[in-house]
Amino acid sequence: MAGGADKGKSSGGIDAHPMDQFIVKPLFGDEGLSLFTITNSTFWMAVCVGIAFAIFVLPTRNATLVPGRMQSVAEVIYGFVRKTVLDVLGEEGKPYFPYIFVLFTFILISNVAGLIPASFTVTSHVAVTGVLALMVFCTVTAIGFVKHGPGFLGLFWVDTAPAPLRPVLFLLELISYFVRPLSHSVRLAGNMMAGHAVLKVFAAFVPAMGVAGLIPIAAMTGIYALELLVAVVQAYIFTILTCVYLNDALHMH
Amino acid sequence: MEGDIGNMGQYIGAGLATIGLGGAGIGVGHVAGNYLAGALRNPAAAAEQQATLFIGIAFAEALGIFSFLVALLLLFAV
Figure 1 (tube, chains in turn red, purple):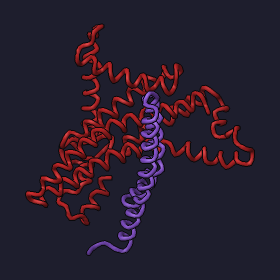
Figure 2 (spheres, helix red, strand yellow):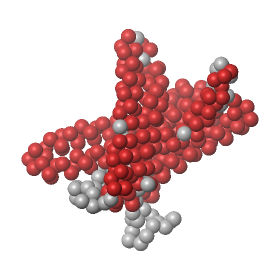
Figure 3 (tube, helix red, strand yellow):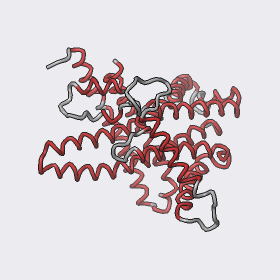
Figure 4 (cartoon, chains in turn cyan, green):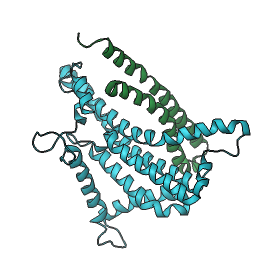
């Protein structure tokens, strides 16, 4: 993506290209990227994990029956995800709750931390969300085969449909199943990337418009609020889709 | 003017591919609008259907995402 942003730079009229913020660059020094280079992406991932630690581990270390302020923040988020998982999966979903909870917190925190000015949005890269989505895809497929054996393939063969339609539905189900990790990851990355790019585009209007630049600043305030909503909703959607996919594997159709 | 006819086609194609996102917008609006209509008729049942609302939105959006993906591929991968 970094290469693409450079290519766009030559044709754009704006000084700072709106896609520049997504370039992954080494945090220290200027040497090229290798597998173990500490980049801004890895740095912000570590920050997100640190925030998650500060929210969930530290306040609940000496948990009290009547929660304090920080403990109730952790409890509200915990209860929310727990309810989501149990609503979709039922009691059988309990063993998978920790994994889904970790997914939700990581995505939520990195989405929201990405909105801090001059920070880096980890989840705006398909490379990151792609790994998260592929992990879900592989886990779900493995759970399906463990639970149902070869019978899991019945997920693609719709018994309730009229016989002549079944091969067609088989193809459609097969495509829709393998397209899941793609839409799952690109939805999150695309939403984060688009929102941040829009903010940058509006920011470029401000110096260009002089006094009237107050108008794009007001618009940016509104868009920023919307982005905060989108950050939370996208984390929720990623979680609930994970639950829905897992539900397919646990209960078939 | 710089670039060549290949670049031009690439950018025009990427622009055209984003039209597909309009379809996703229609779909998401349809889901949310129908949810609101149903929720106003029976507010008591609205809260428990919220998860269904988001699943519906996500699935409606999924197909629009593919056109966004095509645009990205045209811009960065061709």
